[in-house]
Image (tube, helix red, strand yellow):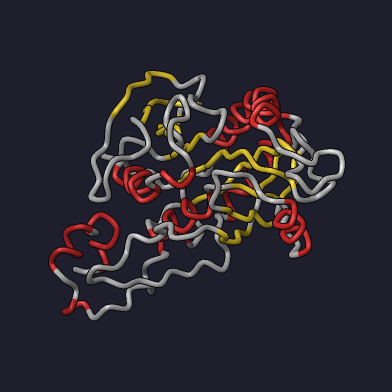
Length: 287
């Protein structure tokens, strides 16, 4: 039996989930190594959830050090069908103000060398990623933002940079010229891997600053980011709790069948190692 139905990934500033009832910690092993931290299982609004601190409690892992595959695989192993990820972002547009919430519906990858797939090593898959987030989750999160009185923006593009340094002014202005909306360092890989794992995924992005393009905010500092996070994290917790309560129990989106037509390798050529390693994800398609 699944131990959780909804996964919550807490980003910078969100290292625990208040209101988690009957909480217990579990450490999950995966074929891809260790997740960022122990998972905290419990109930929020009567729903079984699994909470993971993306950077580890105490924020000990940089964006480039995150084992994204282990984090998402472990969610799948726990039985999670939906993931809501909270993330701190910089704003690339004047109307996206610090303390606002953004629900991006597109991603643009500016990372280098990160592993963003479970596949390879004898089994190849190409999932559709034109619409990278679950539309059902975005709508639920939008209504949750409205219900809590948070100022929010639905839609837009999250440009994912390598980090850990913030952008140069030239980069920040280029992203603006490209029409990007927010900049962060983590969510693109999570979204890709969640799609491959047939898990619904959406991001609740907390705006902490105007990046460095804004004439009145020419530098981004950790102190500034933390100050905004401290003001915003309680809002994020309320929004997530309400979204957990209101999330449909049955999935009607296409996220849950993302691999149905994605496996391209001749089934007779799939290596035994790949079959074993990826059985949790593709076992039903290789019978």
